Image 1: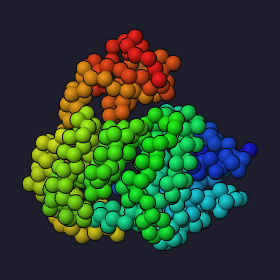
Image 2: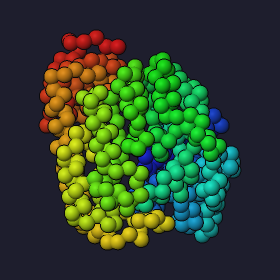
Image 3: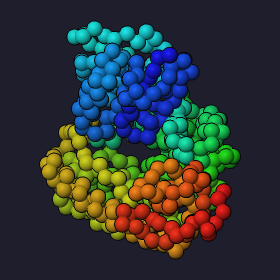
Image 4: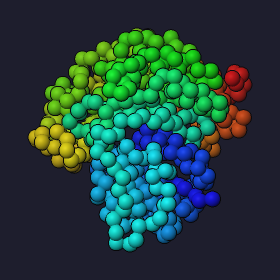
Length: 442
């Protein structure tokens, strides 16, 4: 039995796809193992979001060669679609598969014979226009939480982004197929499903036409038995409608947690970025959520150092976020991407200034998160406990994304428990006192 191992870079969408491709290999008789367990085949699923994709890819290939010099190395993912020739020339790489080919990996590369030294890898990377099929995927690496892909590709031409070039146009599976996938996940004992994709609010496009909506999808998933909670990973503010917010507020299974990309709090920078909203809409979305779910957790994506972001415009973003009733930030430092509109925009923000701005927003994020946690003290929440340990304590997330630490108890793993928020510990986690004496497990 041949052994196959995966190394996944980037987003949760990549993790869901690696997991699904891994199950295809297992169905063909392969044994899925850890990267360091001397596999016969190494599959590296790459990302293109950061500017050191090439460096990371080369390093992982070198490590694979150390582990098994005779091992077959295949590269898939966004970077493989964007730069297949560049990757094919990396010593040790045997195959590069693009977006249209990666789900056929186990069939396309049926011999898995190493490329002779000094020769470029086999390239199977069609133009992105040919990436039109949709493959429902979900991760099963974590027994408490699964990332379920519900949408792929993007039709938004944001100035800084290569994702449309790496993943193609927006497309989805049918609600019926996604519900079946969720039911399969539930049958495996998983309690939480996180919905993921490139632009999940654009869900419902098949064969180039909109056939269903994201609201239709979450209404159907809310009826899936066996799943304790669904969580929406990220949704664009212009696609987060009042109807979606109102449904989540009264739903049986959807968590009171939204992650809404902002990218900039300056309308001028949003225009340069070619975003499809202005900050006034963002304020409206946050206000609507908080009016219906006062304890809802709201996360925000922000990009610092985008071309054209002057010191004054950055401060506009900083003060906008400071005043906004949000819970935490995901801060991304802008990095140049070939074939994007942003590389032509001036002035360019120096890299040291980008780093300074990033640091300022990371500090603000910590303040926002602590303030949000403080507003929860004395209230109750429902925790899904994981088997992850930190300083001898076990951890879990509540429905509104408060991370809780309690004394380790193996009976609590993958169980939900209502708890009383007590205090924030020195590491920034919420602690509860004697939860096992207070409430019954479900």
